[in-house]
Image (cartoon, rainbow, N blue to C red):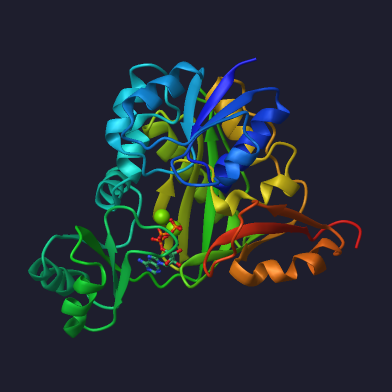
Length: 351
Ligand code: ATP
Ligand code: MG
Ligand code: MG
């Protein structure tokens, strides 16, 4: 059997590791942080920093292929790893998703609709950008943002200075506020031989910038569903992508607008663990090792609820519910805003 190297030891790495193990593969996690959730289930764990060249080389030598569970891997580390092993998905998908400006340029270059946006480097740029994009709008840092961090909402044009200081003057983009009716995502997979398969789109509700629930089926007309799946396939093909990608979409009266993409398994794809024969984690592992994609068709209606912070207090109660599957990440401390686990509730079938 071969060994899969996974960069990042969070819950996504953990669930990838479990899926790999189920198919008879070993996993080796590379994670500088303390007590990583994935470290508890993987065959091997390296806790070195990303600037430790010797550790990166030893990690690469110990695995057959490398994948990742987060997109902010330092470029220098990728340079080292890539000399020794194939990284899937490839560098281009990381380059694009590490930077919101590059990402928006790429998506609009494919002919896809994105929110109106302007590059911002100085507070003067921001003032000009507000004139072009208008208000309400959102200032987002180009790099390192997640769960709504590194963002500032601008309701009127006198808020430029405040917004710029909110994001500490980091290189950023100003985005027009999209009046969406709801949000959906497509979890799409592409195999090494170029076959694409998408899971049924899920409908996402965010609270305080963090994903709260995903519901399948999403409220979409069949034309919208087709559009969503085709645009996702378009993105994966353009990148010659291998693996699973999450594509976040705003549904508006004027059509679908792409918010952002994540070159990895995605929180809004967790429902697939109870809704499909082959879930997003197994699908990603299959792609990365060069297997054919599995059958990801949806056989149940599911609502995924994230368990964040003290939602953990409800675990004993949830554990006794019918048709509820708990997935807990083994994190020691439940801090506010911290994703501790999720529950998939199957809403079709016996009650
Ligand atoms: P993630 O954890 O998904 O990576 P993130 O920090 O990258 O989050 P975004 O996905 O850009 O942040 O934004 C988080 C949420 O904020 C979106 O899902 C959406 O609800 C809202 N939002 C972001 N951009 C816009 C926009 N241009 N117009 C309207 N709402 C937006
Ligand atoms: Mg994001
Ligand atoms: Mg997002």
